[in-house]
Length: 225
Image (cartoon, rainbow, N blue to C red; front, side, top):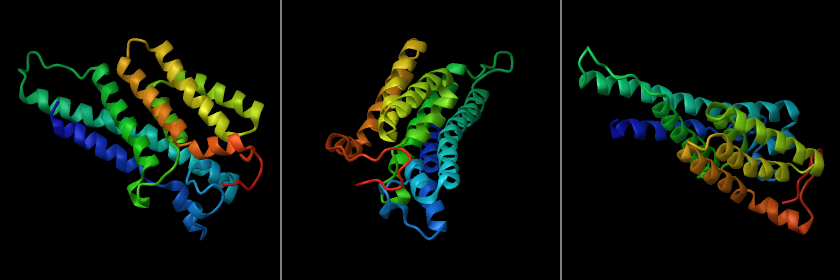
């Protein structure tokens, strides 16, 4: 595959992931979401600051960014595979795109979609924590592993009533589920572990508040910084 196909996948997925829906929805309401609540542009803060309908909309759109980026990766792979191999193959034996190749490009796209969300170029490379976007990515890449992580997320949320605890629990459960359910896909396992570690790192301020006993519980409107 030509290098250009990888560059376009990474760039396209990053730009798609970088769309700051939380910021844009809040801006439409005359609010700079970065200066209220936790200051995060993600769905949790949007829900607290803007209300449930707006928060759910941001959640869905952030997840769709991840899912759409994976789809984009597959499209680019298919296009360049057909173009490249069509020029170098006889009509008698034209190779077909492989599922492994498509998954490889989708995984690359997923990485850059999450990076785009977490470090959006439109907001001076400051973004969200990537939980919803990661969920969208794994809805495309490993839906059963995502289902396990979602179950862990829900159980942790019910038990703690703290969104950050639930999110970090899901970030730990997802790589574990991927390694167990798809042990043959080492690349996906490594990527998922790295994304899980990044998600936990992005919660460093939440961890500090948890240690101080000041982290906001689900259902409260105001979150202490």
